[in-house]
Length: 372
Length: 232
Image (cartoon, rainbow over all chains, first blue to last red; front, side):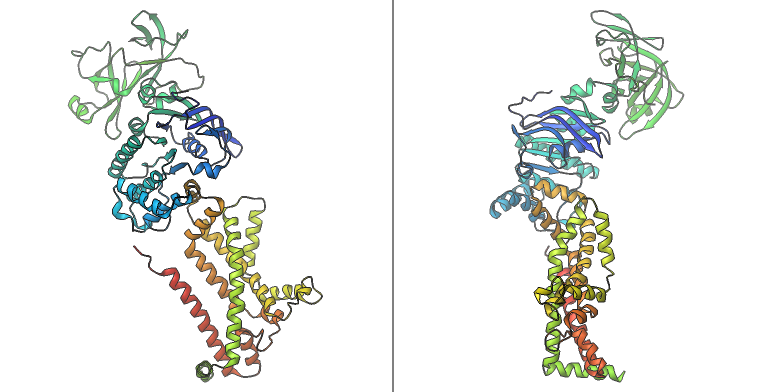
């Protein structure tokens, strides 16, 4: 799985199982972490991301084989002393900022002087050197999370575990701290595991992304590969592909696959999964172009459509169209205004033959409809 | 009201003249209750932390017993400890009956549930994830417990004060196991009863004033430590 090799892996897990109340909540047949890489565990709430992270960090019990830097774990405390963990809340102790950053290092045998020197370096690196004498409980949320990150990096761990460290922060702090962390990770080449449910965070920090759903790693690979070619419909829905349609292959040529979707023909360049004449067609909302007339554009697939619903979802507007099949597009607010998009308006929807992706329809019971 | 005023005057007089009877009773109180509370902290704090964090069968039953122990009548404790330390009792060979040792044992039993119960509350009030974070920093089990105790230090000082308050003002157990021997096992509370029995209300009030002053002094010290502004 992935790019890591057993010999060089910082963490290598085999048949890792975590149970809660007797029920299996995480099952990972194989997972390896290469030196210097940042692996993002991405998935919806309750998928088991944090549970997997805590198991890898030896903070909750698990079954199976776990090796750290090639060695099986015999002494958990000793192995934990080669790791560092940053959780969603900073969880600082009720003492000064400096003491917070020093404590872990001293538990690991550093001298007071070394620990303080390193603490000052890392507090400086996270832009909070001036807070070193402050009591931790007087800090703001953003400051406290910076201390938590400095505390973790000051341990100079073989592997750093980050469990949604930016999720509880306000937007400006979040962006600043995310940028600082990305910079430090890149400079130090610290091997890291980051849990998040934020796709942008995954894309900006991850060398590889593992998508966890229902306690299983459904797909692992480079972020662009996972986002552009999700392995199954649930991964597709999670990585933001909103249109998933059951299709029927009517013709396959060298360059083009012709599909029938609800009586309409769609042409794509992706080849159908082997032997599957009834695959699933995935169309990302950002690949759909909406216009008011049929005059322009070179996209191969063009359909007259009616606007069924318009939803403001933050930075973009989600537009649900009825083209004879349901289709979701993401438009900017400006385009929505310019085009006069509103419920009931007739538009033309188009997408290139190169954008959609075909998946085998192999998992019975998995939802195959567009989320509307 | 005259009696109270007289008592206060007598208290000041007895303190000013370093009355040996009063000093003996006060130092016996301080010694017996102080040692009993220190012992109950030494046993009760680790036990309370273990009860707060541990998962073992019967944990809830133990917690219910501890909570019941908060209302334990000292005189009942005195009876039970008395039976244990009588010459013929199972601890008879230790020769503790009518000694400060027996009083310390009884007061330890009275203070223990207070310390355990309040420690459980103090530790359970900490963020449960803090344990994970402390373990992640590399703490061994023993180091984790001591860091958690230091995080809960303010409520733990309350536990110490509650324990001291419970035993220093107790009378039944000390009377039953200590025998109220003048100059030895006579403490402030038993001395007050003795003086009042003899109709020496002035002396009783003087001792009462000294007892209150002692409780106040101890609590003032602990509160001062607990509430001192920490350096920024």
